[in-house]
Amino acid sequence: MSAPERQLPVHAPMNQFAVRQGELVVGGKRLSTLAEQVGQTPFYAYDRALLKARVAELRSALPAAVKLHYAMKANPMPAVVGLMTGLVDGIDVASAGELKVALDAGANPQEVSFAGPGKRDAELRQAVAAGVLVNLESFREVGALAAFSQALGLPARVAVRVNPDFELKGSGMKMSGGPKQFGVDAEQVPALLKEVAAAGLAFEGFHLYAGSQNLRSGSICEAQQKSYELALRLAQDAPMPVRFLNLGGGFGIPYFPGEQRLDLMPIGDNLAQLLQRAQTELPQAEFVIELGRYLVGEAGVYVTRVVDRKVSRGLVYLVADGGLHHHLAASGNFGQVVRKNYPVCIGTRADAPETEVASVVGPLCTPLDLLADRMKLAPAQVGDLVVVFQSGAYGASASPQAFLGHPACVEVLV
Image (cartoon, rainbow, N blue to C red; front, side, top):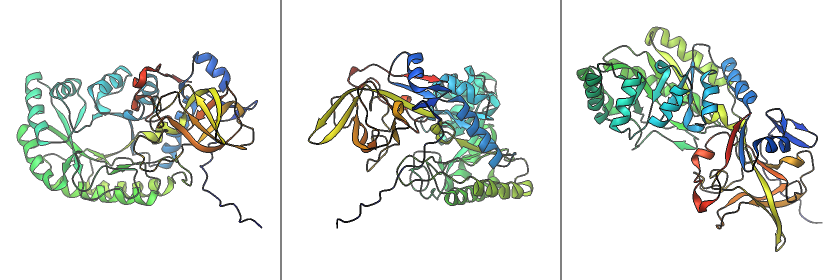
């Protein structure tokens, strides 16, 4: 008797999209119809109903007093930013280019914050002129903002981005603890606050972002508790009462086999407890949670068409017209140490049994151009549409679209 087949971990169910007549449905349309509407492959499609549902889910799970900010670096497509501006309380930007998109979308400058470790003087001047909140990340920025504030006759609104002495356990990218290019080390913040006061800047509060892409609610709660305690200590040296407390985000979505969706309930309960404390300890502070991929990641798909089917020494290769130049993250070349597959399906055979092991590759002349490595898929033929799920964040704008001179992809909000 042969040994039993080893059970491998599977992806979390991608059931946010319906199936109709054998095809995935995105934005209310069958995938093949949507492709005709777009007019080409490859393309990204973002489902506006799913975006609205995700924000509503968060609103119901978190205390009403907590403000939601959208970190638009996750997906800066202007149409997406425009939609999100009407759904969330504020927008977080990381460049003057993003600032323009946010303001064009109608974002309230009072609820726009500007982060980034290398803000150019021109960007700082634009931020003062626009009246947005600047997250200070160095001592240099204090002097520059003071000069621009005086020159423009406008107050420079600032919060201090703190590099804590702890990290977010289990995060995909750790952005605090130890030496970091982000923010000001916690032990240096009292000295920075003295310079803020001397420069006459309009201090509003603190920004603490410990890490990203975390699926463990316990770790997120612990980081929020430590962030609050740190802000409470630093507030003793602040020139004005804390009115803005950005506790970061870090909420993850399941990309890889074995991962499960984040449980929001403990996070909501934890924030409620912190808010209760803040009523007496930081009575003027508004809590902000800053989220990017959690808001938009699961609402997007990347769609590419099979242009060739070939078999090499027993392995089926589905050669598609899109690849790593459009979706660097799905290829495994955007932060992965050991490559793992994103969830993928044959979108035009969405209800067919997955009976074939195949690899999906792109058209580029490099072995790195790999969207699915030996995955169990429905048998596909030339013309079928391959879907990469969890593609609403860090997709088109985070990919080298000029690489090897292939055409750019299209993005649509449907």
